[in-house]
Length: 508
Image (tube, rainbow, N blue to C red):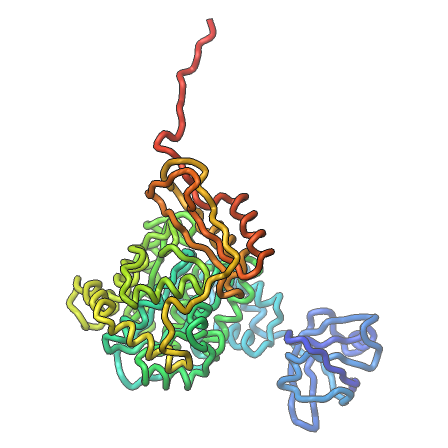
């Protein structure tokens, strides 16, 4: 059937047909049609949306997601034919029924995702099926390799190439700003691609953007890494493992993180940047993604095995995740805290210890130092100023000002101190609630927003002392953050006497 086309600026790959035309073509809602642009010699297969009111018979509305390959203009005539369903839908159905996918079946699903042959609902079905029924290690390996094959890769002629990853879930985890310059200062290459915040108060890419641009092509990342020894860039700006980015996008509304897909996601990005040595941080404890050390060890074993299959040496650090890393949460606050350590401040013990521990593991794995001496070597690179000099070099190569210091980072001018309700000790902090307060204050969009945690678990506090300071760039955001803090009570203060239990009185 020949129809007159119109364009709509929607990224989703769909075509909109009138119900009368759909009946003549022989398609129903969700079926596929192939659209032909005969003069250009292009064609695209896309799912159908049917309407009786938005367009008239004889017309077809084509999304920009379709037209980026079809290349028509408003008013062009196009030919529409009914098309068969992608074979990958049957493979998704197989996974929904609890089946095991072969490498070829996984490859077809990933290819159809990245070529936008599958609809959003079909991609969601695949993700949900993998979440419910799980992926075995063969399936995870297949998915990882296909994620890598779906996009661009970095290739280096030298070895080793180091990478670092954190499972996440802990606020204030700005250790990448210390680990990368330490590793690069040792003479190793570390092309670190990072993410922006999705549910947190600041992803590593958000933090680095306070110091320098983070959006680069794969070729630029490779050149900068060779020049400076390391980079900290936003992976979402590249075409590295785009299938992984699609899966994350469709996982987000469901708030799920399927184990097999998480493993594939982590290792695909490492493989794609050319890494052969990787240190992975697995925070465990209340409020993290991994509830306890036993589960952390299981995950570590899976990551190490997947790395072995892919030719990447992996070691995992199971770390304490029951409280924030350092005391600051929010973009400029976290960056300032990290820079102060590079500049020679002793800084929070948790931030310093975790950073040098992970950087030290990489130094030991690559033979830069003997086993057991990595943390000490990493600490020395900070103390002697080499890590700071390297960080300035990384900032410069990414187009930032290498003269920036921690004191240049500006915090929000709207400030409120949350007082301790009574004398006692901090017995717990609530990670998720702290993140919510920082986000309510405006982080990560407002770089000056966030919070400073004055007291951490085990520390004594007097009634009325500040336990939390909230910063915001806008007054109305501060008021909302204050209310969030009052409702959630993110810092729990108790006296040494938690409760008094009297004997049960007997009634005569």
